[in-house]
Length: 450
Image 1 (cartoon, rainbow, N blue to C red):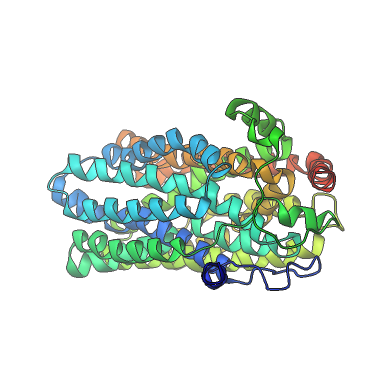
Image 2: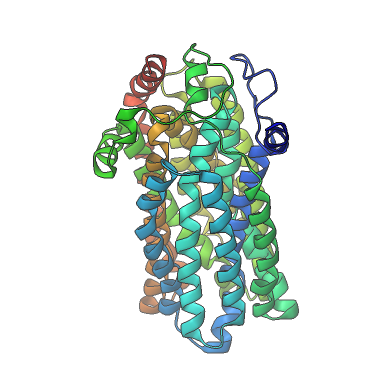
């Protein structure tokens, strides 16, 4: 028994020996955050390698822009099939074990992509990879809410959710490795960190569900072994639970607004390296490096800015974090439309960087608000709803641009088809300010009386 306790204590995410203090903003340490951040980064790098090597793959197999745009569409549609079941599993089973298995599947699918003998097998591997990747998101988001209280939640959600928009890392690596060693090498090499990440996440401890919420509600509980779920929660079936989650207006409005943003960003940034190759005459490696670098810097800066100002307005302005996130999406999307009009490469890249930075302020603010308004026992399903809508956005953005490009003969013109919807997405997020305070207070009240 003593040895078993010692082994458990050495696992990442173990609580402090004296129990969890209600005043401690970081009771489990930064270990869980680091592990889950790495999971998100590996996820997005693997998913976005294709954007960086796309000109090379099209040159080898000669498929059209419509076919190229349909790859992320088919992959995302496959991912939507597993999104809600993934949330259901995350609310009922060991989330760290789910993640370990899923990350290993990523690595195998990425390896299969690099070894594909033909376009059909290549296509299939991308679809399987996306389906596996979508299983991890509800589990990661649910775990963060059980590891970190409100004082730290926006920070950790901002940085982990930021990885969803850091596809520029994969785009950059894909383009550079692809140009130097061939596009297959980019996928084969990426399978290695995927396998190592699976081993890392297997060592992460499963926290007790809802314990942090009880502490936030001024009802601290002593450190103890995870208790079985209450009878009412254990018998809650999937469809009643889903209906309960969808009754949360803040969740629905924020998810829809961010999904519309993702529709545009997913399409524009998937095709951005190809645009630079065709319109500006850049080499694949250079175009991918610039596109990826702009995305990386902009998302990092926007996340930091959103976290800083989100903390300042939270509790002072009604729905303050959503005010920042919604305004960022609206202004950033409009600025992206202006950037694409620029004839100068320097002006275009500069304005795109500014647009990404402003839009990225929504990453920490919007995600933390969703965690605030969904009860601990349903956060897996709640974040599955968010991920489902985000995946739908990812699904159709590249395809819409690809089809429009083939129809008009202009990839640049095709990108404008998604700018106006992105602006509308920001307005939808702003509309979520009205119900936010009421629904967040209800979650804490439920935790107080549980």
